[in-house]
Every structure is written in structure tokens, then in C-alpha cells.
Amino acid sequence: MIKKLLRTVPALVIWFLISFFLWGFVFGILRNPPAEKKVVIYADVPAMADTDLAVALEAEMPAGLKMIEAHPFFYAMFGSDNLPVSDIYLVRKENGAAWAEEGCFAGLEDAGALPALESALAPFGGTLGAYLRSEDGTVWGIKVYDAATGTGIAKNYIIFESEAMASADYYLCFSSSSAHIGDADEKAIDVACRLIGLG
Image 1 (tube, rainbow, N blue to C red):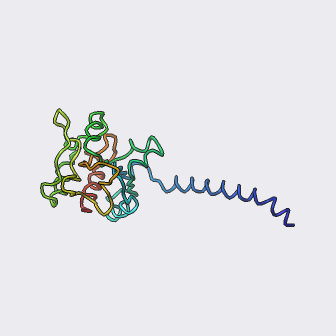
Image 2: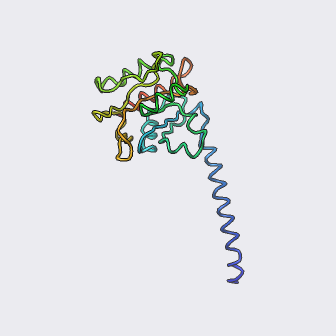
């Protein structure tokens, strides 16, 4: 009896593992809404409380959205298509300028985002709100963390400085491929203003 039971244990373990991964895959598909129903934020920061940040932003989610995701950049390494499908980026100044020239970001003026972002950043005084511009004057990003003063947005959720990464200014940018900016949809702008409002 015991020998028979011991022979079935490997089969039971294999069955359990297969069912665990299968149900995890099915649950992931069912839980993950389409791009039109979620806003994704990627931050090039040393560390962030991504789940807590997403929960805080979802507390006042714009109508029509089902989910807000927040991830540090290293999360994108698990899937090469993760980073381009983002809606909002928090990037270091030196990286942002290079990516803007490659067409990764939408111009904030063309997207109609500047007035809302400037208004949301007003409580920070003149410390934040400087622009990340290209040589032709296009505004690609707006400063949300100032390295010299340590002033920044959502500091309860995002760590902008660490010993491993040199201190730098950070800018909020929108993806040029986002479905949530422009005339038809401003949900990414609403989420960005809410992110700034987390102070």
C-alpha cells in the first residue's frame, strides 16, 4: 500500500505543478485588461513601492480605466515589449534627452498636457516644472524631481536617489504610442496629475 502511494507521488506533484502554472496563466490573462482600459507607468528609479503606488493612484481612477500599473524599469527586462507599451515614463535627464530624440516621447504641447501638469506642479513652487526640450524647442518632459534640493513627487512611493545610482533630475514624459493622450483621450494626463498630487 505504501509502495503504491509512493509511486503516485511524482505523478501528483507533476499534476499539481502543471495545474498551478496553467491556472496562473489563465488568471493573468483574465486579470490583465487591454491597453485601452489601463495606464502603465515606468520609472527609471533605484526603487519604488510599485504596488502601493498603483493602489494609491487607483483610489481616484479616471472613468473608463480598469487598472493602473506602476513598474521600475528593471521589470521591463522580463519582456522586451513591456517598455514600449507604457503610457507614462519617469526618466533621468540624460536618458530622457536621448530617448526623446529617438521619438519615444510625445510632445507635451501637442498632447495638450502642459497646462494640467504645470497646474499640478504649482504647489512645489519654482523647484519643479522645468522642461526637457529638444534642440528644435519641443517640450518632451517636465521636471518632477530636483536632485539639488531633493524635492520631488510621490516620495512616499518612489526613491529617486541611492548610493548605487548617481543623483539626477527626473522628468515625466508621455509615450508617443500611448492611447491615453491627445484629443480623444486624456486619461494618462489625469493619472500623471494624480501622481504629482501624491506629493
